[in-house]
Image (cartoon, rainbow, N blue to C red; front, side, top):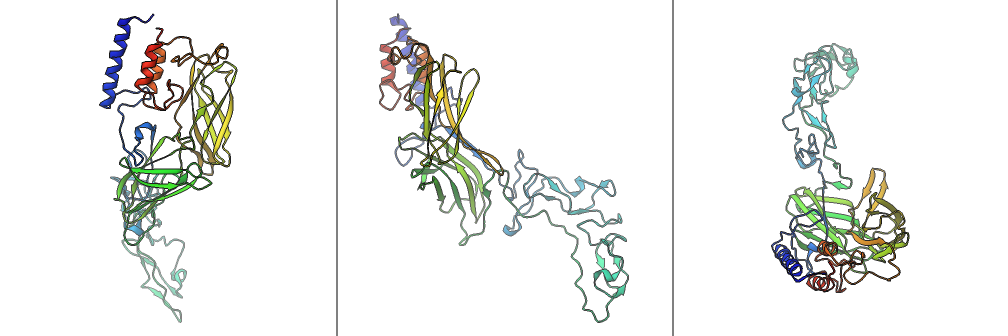
Length: 445
């Protein structure tokens, strides 16, 4: 039985945990330290939402991310210079001389994945390279002035590999325009980086820095957009789940926008945070943002082999992958309906007799690869024996093992402060002191 000393010890232990929660120092088994309290316009806290962060790379902004980019091509239309770091043309070998290039300016590919040496050259090696008009006796296929529209004359190449047409003769033919000078500029203009759907944007008068986010939520549900923990906008998804958000004038540079929504039963998506660099005086657009689905179960305990219904809400007509933890993780798939609702009947036969959790995500195939949302929050259920004989687990027996002990207490703490129906003993929509008090009353040890 649960003696008075043990009861006092657990109460003191619980009080210490509550104190730690008040100072945001509680270590959650979800793997995070600290609970950031962020007030929203609806007087709720985003600490109730599981959070994920996605960093979107921006290729063409003149900055080089040391972890994901070799270089950056810049954007000439926005007067953003290319950035190749400490690398130059002299860092690469000329295939004709087998020595470092002597001249030119190193470029960068449009996706920031490699350097471009086509703008590098070595004048005097008798091999015309793309950045040269000529080199020695190599005029790029021409042998005399007729190759350039003249009637006769001898071609000449200058010491700096420029084409000299002063010896060319023209009779009754307009003089041609001499060729361009050797290219010393960098690579081409900027383009989207490795994050599909990101575009550094177009110039927009009157000189504003704007952010546009286009994505998919639940049909006819509000999407809340936050910056620095404050709601800056609420937009309504249409009947197909599409939503469009445009910010007001935004400070250029690295920005973080967070988004979340909820379904018709008030279950929330996880909090998605997008971190990116907003281009100055431009419209920065992020497309194909999928908010995570919601998830729930129709039973919190079943006999091994029984069917449990897993369901939730998401964008319409998308593939849903449900991950159920066990000794071997089980992954099942289904498709959401036209209204965004999804469900599946999951056979518990392969699962161990134990406590399990399930979570869901959107997973789509696209021409550019697989698109995945973040995972939903997790829901828990118990698979055991003779569960149906007693109809339900005993009060406060969260893992249905016919005892109320430290295992149940651990489940309660894991879900502390949430609305998880599986651990909400008094069904008031919040797991807190009232549930703890009930658990202490029914404690068996």
